[in-house]
Length: 352
Ligand code: P6P
Image 1 (cartoon, rainbow, N blue to C red):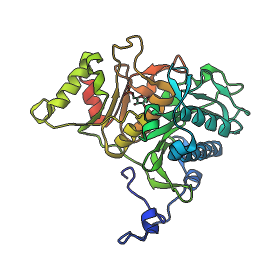
Image 2 (image 1 turned 90 degrees about the horizontal axis):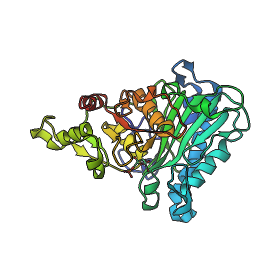
Image 3 (image 1 turned 135 degrees about the vertical axis):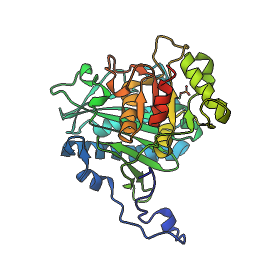
Image 4 (image 1 turned 90 degrees about the vertical axis):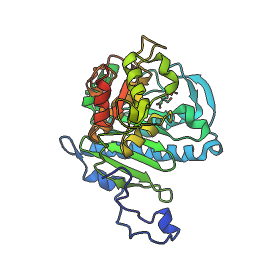
């Protein structure tokens, strides 16, 4: 099923507006009903995982309300502090992080959390079976200009006992679940538990997460790439050559014209790719040659790559091989990201 192709329109706004020609809605499944029968890679979703995902989704529904209120919720602007990345924190970065911490600290399903906005791990009240990692509000540069932003989350198995930083340093292939929420024209949750990708839209009226797509597949081929072109002079030669060939269009070696998109919110760019194919690139560049890339492995690269692979796409850490095989050494380590339509990622590999 293509992402966003409605499985149902349960009294959708158009329905409520009485628009003519709306086919009769199926009864859309809400998130808890989905979770109750959801499968993981190794069988039915355990109750603790169902509970954790429901708790994360509940907090994200609160973040959605704040985001939608913008200046009205006093949530815009910068806090004037810096996070571990050395980036200025936006009000909403900190508020979203606090909402997730407070909302999940007492969860019996968790042993600990880690966040882009926090230097160290956060042990939770109980020693539950999972670890949660997140970028609470990705796309900060877009917060104040009303462009889609999002929350990215990753679930790893806990190691038992009090959580330690090294317990979080598991490769992406160890993820039990991952997903993201796009706070955009719709508020949409995209989720995988290791057995397919499922999409839920937050119903503005009922605040329920209603399923709108199942077993989403990313088109294997594409004519659309997402990269920040202003960095072109800093890229390694193979990336430069690939983009040059895309820009050469029909007359060039690719034999087709390409389109470009760059929202500068990873969640928005990835959601477009999950929805209609494409390739997303944040490659190494020589501005900070000691860093493999700008994006973070544990709570951006890995969760997005789990979703993309579960939807039939591919994700590589630049020239360092499959993203989900990267063995982390630091909680906030960065990584080059090339992900999306499988055949296009393979084509890019051919330029190495
Ligand atoms: P640039 C947002 O700050 C982010 O972490 C990703 O969401 C996004 O893809 C990237 O950085 C944008 O980076 O250098 O284009 O502003």
